[in-house]
Length: 279
Image (cartoon, rainbow, N blue to C red; front, side, top):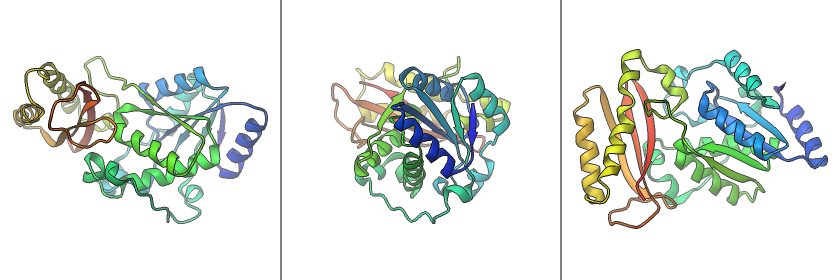
């Protein structure tokens, strides 16, 4: 695996690959890699000639400075994981490299960014779109791979690619879970052992709510989920919303398809998110 640190070199390499007619698959990450990331690498390798992964902890997408400071950094371990996964190229730029020009980009995603994570974390998606658009410009992938746990982020990036008229196909990939159901996330590393034992309750409560989808209204499902979390003193439910899977706008009346529940929960000072498809 080749490791690159500069925009100039990664751009030269990807330009040459394009001239040779090679297809490029790209997996952007913030490091602390896990089985979810590996699944994205594997999918990319199946569908492209060359797979590139990036590791960059993007400071401008964090609303909370403490959250940024706590984010797990495991670069040496990440490199080993990517080598074992047969990733072709790893791009690890510095902050000075990525933001050699100030981040003046301003994106408008309309109602897509006014709900869920966008509502709770103002400016977050502008920070995501800024760094991803820059990475796309330098790496020029044919396809880019993202996990569906960050479902709203995938929708935002699809919209960004459309706005910027970038010839890149965004590939959403299924959530990878631990055996106990917890959605795999880099943030899980921050949980204490006791909190880690409790964390799977997020998924189990969502599953319970899905079992009742034909007997309860969406409003009743929301009340059920809220009441379940009130029974767990260690957890603080930030939000739970049931929305249309394309517009991400709240749904109050039953519809036959395209219905997803989004949840954010605080546990042990760590913010965990997950989704549950209902129809």
